[in-house]
Image 1 (tube, rainbow, N blue to C red):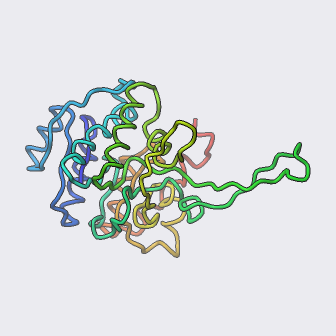
Image 2: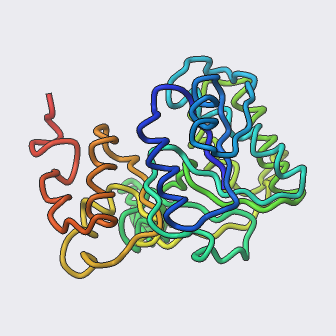
Image 3: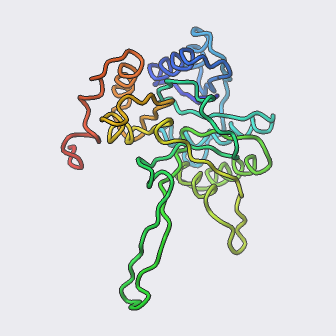
Length: 272
């Protein structure tokens, strides 16, 4: 299990460390891309790799700029024949994720979907009135994979996937998650050759994004289900919500999540 971290998120990083230690995870390490994080890992006696990845076209030290570097680092482990469970730092670990992976596909990924249809796909209509008799066509829709949490096994296909993503991000100003999805999903056509990686979507109520948690899981029916990992990717108040998720599922405070709106604010989309 690997996490890539930079300075400025030490509180989240400490919670991540507490989570994997509490879950009994032993095969983990932090990829520290600055000296401050490396120093914290020394203090906490956490295995780490201090490295400086080459910057992609998005050279800003922003979430997206830093996130874009992870594919080149994952490739290094795949070349060593090591499987990787990649985790962003804004993730609360509540159970050992390795007990909940199927390990039967090249890539096993968190979804940005928030129910069975959006997470696993659904039939959707397309209406083009000018076609008359054939105005209605069928499409298949599915929400994006989340590149902040995925499991990947080493083979020629996955190594090529990491390389192809890295090359694109080196050349173009693109969002790394969008590139990840395109290279996983897109079929071969014309001169384009697909990566042909096999894919499994993680169970959306075990590996949970924060929209799923705050839109449905915290209410009756799923209220007492224990997630494995929760990625606070849909909300800007990440640290506050992470602390409350820990209070709910670790400390047992059943009201810890009640104060939060489903989205960014109670009056969304007008949150100014």
